Length: 124
Image 1 (cartoon, rainbow, N blue to C red):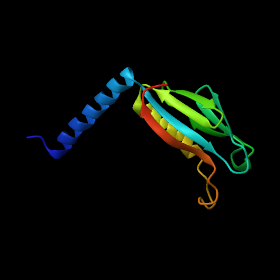
Image 2: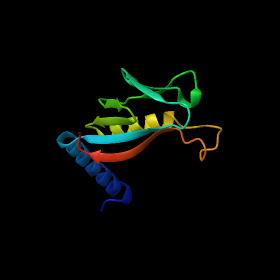
Image 3: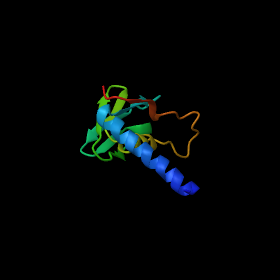
């Protein structure tokens, strides 16, 4: 009989295959909201990098890496991350969210950043 580790590995492989099938059929979509209170954040896409400029008034642009074959679009207050590989899409969205993490300040007051607000299957 399979042990616990082998049984869990079978479930993991099954999930990865299901995600691959869903990705090819429908695709995956993550939407992020640009939130700021004082300094207007501007987001640009250059090659395989998302540039977040004027974050809390910083002079240098923060960078978030785009993983794999993922498309990133910026429309006014929304950033759309879409692709066929769930791991690449979710990691790219996480990179963008982590790039705008506020450090050494009260997170209840300084709510500026980019936040994931919608995840779904199917590319618009």
